[in-house]
Each structure stands twice: as structure tokens, then as C-alpha cells.
Length: 89
Image 1 (cartoon, helix red, strand yellow):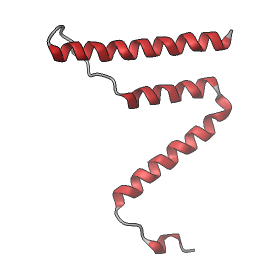
Image 2 (cartoon, rainbow, N blue to C red; image 1 turned 120 degrees about the vertical axis):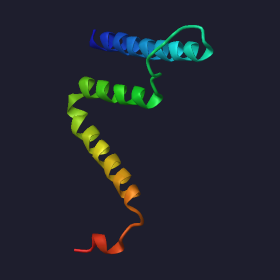
Image 3 (tube, rainbow, N blue to C red; image 1 turned 180 degrees about the vertical axis):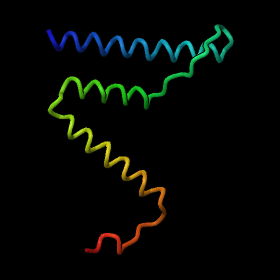
């Protein structure tokens, strides 16, 4: 029953996502007036990541660690070249 409910919820999320993208596409063509920004596929991925946290709470710490590693890599990439002495004790 839980899996069925989760499948229905995921279907609703996908339906809303693609409807909003369709409305933005129709606005670009001048067919309708749509004032919102079109959702990106990155935002869809973030939504499913949050859904995974709800569905598998025991995996939440792994997801948080992956997000922290991603943030660290982004910060390191903006800082310039790596300093080899940074990892020395």
C-alpha cells in the first residue's frame, strides 16, 4: 500500500513538473500568458532527493554527506588551483 501511494505521489509530481514546462513553452510561443519561471530538471532532481529522504529515512545521513561533498567540491573549484601543502599534517 505504501509503495502504491508513493508511486501515485511521484506521478503527481511529474505531472505538475511537465505541465509547468508545457505552460512555459506555450508562453514562449505566445499562445498563453504564463508568469512563472519554467522548472528545471535540476529542481526535479532535488525534489526527488527530498522524496527519497521521506521514503528512506535511514539513508538520510548518506544523502546529507553526498550534498556536503558536492558543496565542498564546488567551493574547492572556485578557490583556484589546489595547494599541495594543504593536506600535510
